[in-house]
Structure formats: C-alpha cells, structure tokens
Amino acid sequence: MEQQERKTLAWHETLELHELVAFQSVGLMKLKLSYRKVPDQELKEIYNKCIHELENNLGELLRFYPSAPGYPGRDDEDDFREDVGFYAGDLLSLSKALVRNLSVAITETATPSLRNVLTKQLNAGIKGHERIFNYMYKHGLYPSYDLGRLLGLDIENAQKALRMKYK
Image (cartoon, rainbow, N blue to C red; front, top):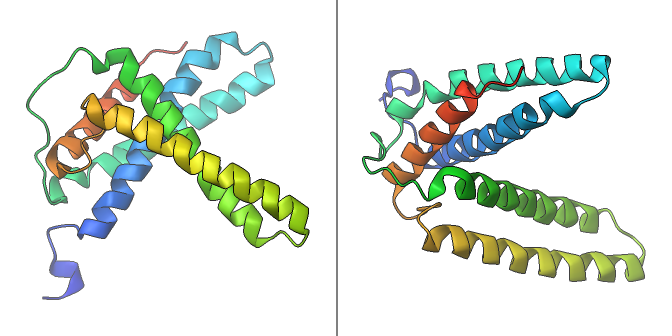
C-alpha cells in the first residue's frame, strides 16, 4: 500500500500527536487564564496572537484523531478531572520539559562539576516525572495503556481549551 493511500496513522505518530495536543491544550489554558492579568498592552497582543496560533494548531491536529488507532476515544465522564487534570497535566509537561532540557544541557557540558550537578538534577527530574505520572495514572488522568481513552482525554482537553473565554 502506498503511503498516500493510508487511512490510519501509525502508532508512533499517534503518540507524537497525543504529546503535541496535550502540551498545547495545557499551554492554551494557561495563556487564557493569564491573559487578563497581563498589564502591558503590547505583551497582551503577543499573548492574543499566541492564543490564536495555539487554537489553530489544535484545530488542525484534532482533525487527525479519527485516523488514529484506538479512536473513537472515551465514553465515560469523570468530574474529578475538571481542575485536577489541568494542574496535574501542567506539572507533567513541566517535568518532561525539565528532563529533556537537562539531558540536552548535559551533552553540551564540558565542566565536570557542572555535569555532576546537571546529572543530579536530571535524576531528580526523572523521579519527579515518575511521581506525577503515577499520580495521574492512578487517578485515571493519564490512561497510558488505553490508547482510546488517552486520545479521548486529549480531545476533551483540547475542546475545553478552545472553548475557554479569555477576554
């Protein structure tokens, strides 16, 4: 079968799609929650542009979900996730970014004492990521072994972020 004829996304690209949608949904919510608190008009305009760009990104990415293995997503609703899911997802995104950034920084470090500090911080960051992941998994906020539910949560979070008012 030729690549252009495929109707289903590959597993690895589905997981990348999930990561992008989850990360951008949380980011969009944070920007919208912060917008009214920004005191500078020029910065507010930058926020507004960024909000619109993330909304466009999510709209474009969500169109691929029906082609993802494991779709159609979730059926059950859980009120517990309303705010807790947002805060937990934000912490998970931060911990992932921290681990990635520390890993890259270590590869650029020539000074042994700095490398030791960064390695210590990387190991702590990995443990921190494990703590928040385990919390989210335990509470059904990150069903990593159920792709359909995982994609369903992505769709819910993205739609919530898109519906949020900010002005």
